[in-house]
Structures are given as structure tokens and as C-alpha cells.
Amino acid sequence: MTRKFALDLVRRPRRNRKSATVRDLVRETELSVKDFVYPVFIMEGSNKEEAIPSMPGMTRKTVDVLLKELEECFSLGIQAIAPFPSIEESKKDHTGSESYNPNGLVPTCVRAVKEKFPEMVVMTDIALDPFNIDGHDGIVSPTGEILNDETVEVLCKMAVCHAAAGADFVCPSDMMDGRIAAIRESLDNAGFTNTSIMAYSAKYASAFYGPFRDALDSAPKAGDKKTYQMDPANRKEAMLEVSLDMEEGADIVMVKPSCYYLDILREVADMSDVPVAAYQVSGEYAMLCAAAENGWLDRDRVVLESLMGIKRSGAKMIWTYFAKEAARLLSKEK
Ligand code: PBG
Image (cartoon, rainbow, N blue to C red; front, side, top):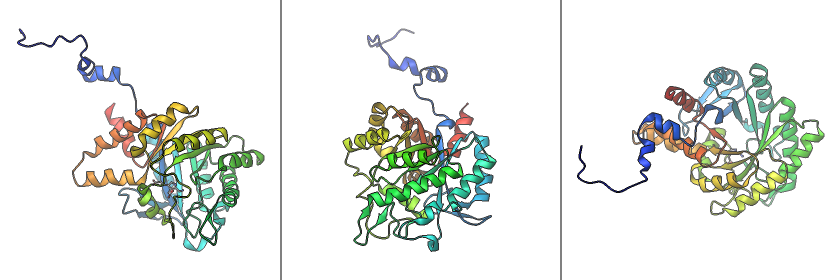
């Protein structure tokens, strides 16, 4: 065919997109089921499962029900889970003492999971909000202040309790100062030198945690979390938090939320010498579910695209409520 009009171009980037196989060859980022950490909501009792209205498809479940779900996770190739507990009101107090009860919900769950699925990596949340009557991640003083050092003392007990139950990672999500060093020291002193710490390092005071707090009934009773979680306006502060957590012994650092914080994620990935995790939080999940349910977005495609964006921005692993769904989609793609 003679061409009526041709640009004199040496470089035509479209050549690298000309077929599916060429696109496969040049693809810079691969998403894998091995990247996912699946957060799950647990509660006391047996044989019970409750829907979470603001997180369609996610449920709160008793440990026996979770174990059944984990068979499915395991067969899908999901290798890591993060249980979050819903605690009965009667067990909550002002210092979160249920958080280090060796027979509490989290240690019980960890033991059950590790017994049935020894290879499954279990990552437990370290913060007081599910156990604290005030709904804050730290201890609240009579004047409403969040007490840093007193909180860290409790977090250390909690971390040792989870390590004793067999948690592979303890994951402080509380944003108190100095908690990584203190937890590392407590773990080491108790003989748990092999228990890893995944630090929620750059955790922002985000409205995107709303559905999670519905799931656990853990919203603060008064005030907000702005004196400990970070201001969404700040970037340099994230680098400070990450640097401190690495110096203090974090094995992995996290940026949270994910999709509105990809600039932070990229910068953290470039500056850190430990692997970086990102948390696609409950509100990010809820938004995509809502739009897909209305037929406004193509669910399969936005689920994978959102996760790919997070991975491309530097996350080595992604905490996502879409873990099972994305695992299925990825296996279909092959
Ligand atoms: C608790 C914790 C929260 C999340 C993870 N750990 C809530 C909060 O800080 O208020 C949020 C996760 C999500 O929204 O999916 N410290």
C-alpha cells in the first residue's frame, strides 16, 4: 500500500504494544498472588459469620469459619493473612488489657491458623483500638490526651503475646513514637528474635478507614486520630517516620492508604532499604465495589488496575480485601 501521509519518525513507541505477546515481553511490572496479604475480620464464638454492609463481600467470622475460608485462600495461592479482631464491649477497658490476654481472640486465632496451615504467614495488628473502650489506638488520659509511652508499654506486651502464639509478623499500626525499638527489644528479651516487625510507618489520618471501623465497631468515641496518625498534607514527615522505623528495627515498612498516596509510596520505595508494603484500605475497597455494583466501572479490570498501580509505585506487597478475587482473576489471565 502506498502511503499518502507518513510521519518521519524513528521512534514509534506503539511498536512495543502491537500484540499481546509483545506487550507481555515488555511489561515492566508483574502482579502476583504472592504479593497479597489478605486482611480478615474475626470474632468470638463458633460457626458464625456476619456481613459488613460497607464492605460488600467481606464478613466478620468466627475462627472455625475462617479456617474453612483459608483452605480456599491456600488453594488460590494466598500466602499471608492479617486477622483483625472484633471484641465484645464487655472485654474493653481504658488500657486495652484484653490485647495481651494469651487466650484472647487474636492469639487463639493465630494458634489455630498456624496449626492447620503452618506455611501461612500470619501478620497481627498491634494497636489498642479494638480493645480500648475509647476506640483509640493508644491509652487516653483523663484530659483526652493520647499517652505515648504508657501505650508503648502495652503494645510491647501485646506483641510478645502474639509472638508466643506463633505470629510471623507483628504489625504496629498505632503510630506512637518509639514503638518499633521498644517492641523489638521486648521480643528479643522474650526470645522471639525470629518474629518480624512490619511497621505501619507512614499511616495517614484518613477518612478511608471508615468501613474498617464499621467492621470492628472501633471508631473513636471522642476526638479523632490526628495527634498520632499523619496529616495527609505531609510528605517529608513520611520519610522521617520510615527512617525512624528502619533505624528502630522494622523489617518491612508500610504506606497507608494506597491509591491517594502513591507519591509517598514511590518515594518510600526509593529511599528505604527494607521491603515496602502498601495497604489498599477499606474505603478504597468500598469505593470500587460501589461503583462496580452500579455498573459504572468494570469490576474485574479496576480491581487489577488498582493493584497494578500500587505495585508499579513501589510496593513489594499489597494488603488488599480483593486478594481472593484478584488471585482468581490472575489465574484466569494465564
Ligand atoms: C487499627 C487499624 C486501622 C486500620 C488498620 N489497622 C484503623 C484505624 O487506624 O483507624 C484500617 C484498615 C482499613 O481501613 O482497611 N489501628
